[in-house]
Image (cartoon, rainbow, N blue to C red):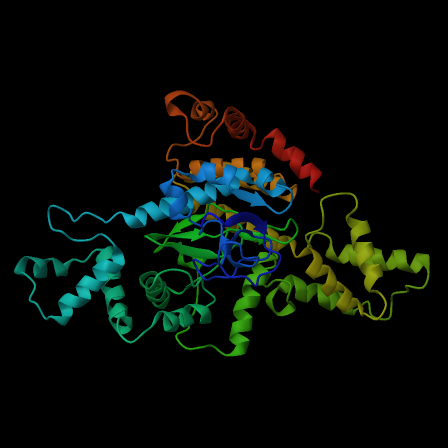
Length: 482
């Protein structure tokens, strides 16, 4: 063990799988790479890769008193002269602390209740209930009387128990994971957790994508009541952006669910349709760039067809006229950049595609590049509704969306420290039941009312937003990223 080396890296491909959860480590994602010599003095070693959030500090080190901070400081290296470790140190520390806390939670056995000894773990309760049914034990008369008026939770438990009985015998982890794979869901977790995801999917549908960031939604082991967002990998900046979105498992089905949940392997065209749905939503089109899915697209394609044979790309005058025709058609309907160069951007696209493509095909290129204004508006409305649903106080949703937007700009600038400080504030404010106002905003950064992740600078931005509906730093970033 003493000869092992530990380094943090950015995954160059998506081929390596995490040793702990067995899931692929996505390209551009942080990973910890471990090299363990097969024997002392050997010039070759066993190598393994881990998600940072899955990696557990080896027992031999923890037994010597090495904690997360000391491990990062003294044992963890980076293969880029330490720049990665320096730039993203806080993020790495946070993920390692989370992994360490999960370890502690799992090693502590839950104490049975002094009253009735019943476990509160959902899957354990299902297991015990199924055993009782198998033994045909009679229920006490008092319990039978309660069945007349079942609560929503009791009805859900009864429905889950019915599905649980179907899968409790004869289904291996690999078989259960097939159900998740067919529905393009995350495969990680123990058998009990995988079984829970299958039961939930059969009853309520597969998890869709995050309405805030368009990342994959997921369940977290030991938290069966909520749906979480796993964040989204941004190709432009080459990293995964975390997201604090959560939703009740049994709430907002139209927002967080998709149907059907396949119990048999779907045909290839259905697999492709599920994949395309996610891709379209992440690109902001929501399927809207396809003529069949968007009436605005149908209208513009029809009008562009009328330009066939009427455009001249051989002269400067003709080219200017052609660009003007396209700009006039798409103005107000395509989500063009909000600056004076919008016409120039359209002109570049038109000229780059004028040889060999019809006006209709050029219009489709414009759709694919910019998307539609109405889709952008619908997406913004959906994000606002999602933020309100996930906030303990819906009145704080607009502020949280503004902080989220500012965080994205910092990620785009590769300023992870600033971006993550916003993320910490968002996570705290999402769970705040008190409405944030101009009068109380500063109080959350000091004294007895101070909240985690809320410093003086953040509190001042909160106060400014409550007064004006925006804050100076956000407007600066919007201007810089136009």
